[in-house]
Image (cartoon, rainbow, N blue to C red; front, top):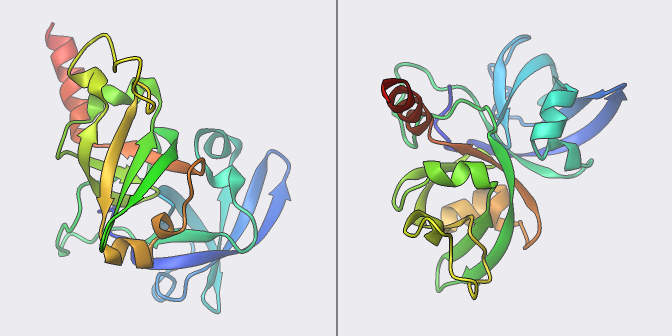
Length: 213
C-alpha cells in the first residue's frame, strides 16, 4: 500500500528483454536505502517487486500483463520515473490510499501554465470516468492528486457537448511547484501516456451498491 507521495525521481538505467517480459534496472538511491530482495517499490504508480539491489540501483521484473496494462512498456534507458516505498502503519497518510495497481492508461491532453503552477488536463478510459468526482482523489503516474474538474459526462449522462475538444472522458489537476520540480509530471508533454489508479474506496462502494441492488 502506498500514499501517492513521490519520494524520489529515479531513472531507468537498463532494460533487459526476457521473452514476453522485461527486467528493469532503476536508479533510486533514496528508495533503495532499506530495500531488500522481495520488497515493493512503486514505479510510476506500478507496484514492482525488488529482485536485487546494488549501489543505489534496484532491478525488478515486469511481466506481459503489466506491460500491456500500464505505460511501463514505453520506458527507455534514461527515462525518469516516480518512486515510492510502501507506507508503514506508523506513517502519516499524506496523500490517499494507493494500491499500486494501475486501472488504465491515460494521456496528457493539455497544459495551461499559471504564475506558479500548471493546470493539466488528462484523458482517461471511458470505464474509469464514473469513479472521478470534483475534489476527489486520483493517482497519476503514482502521484496522489486532487481532481479540479472531472469530464462533463458526469453532469450530463449524454456526455460532454460536441464542441468540447477534450471529449467526454477527461479530468484536470493543478500541479504545484513541488510536483512540477520533483515528479515526472513536470516533464510530460501533450500526448505522453500516464498510469492511472482511481480511488479504491469508490470501487468498493460501487461493488457493494451493485450487490445490494
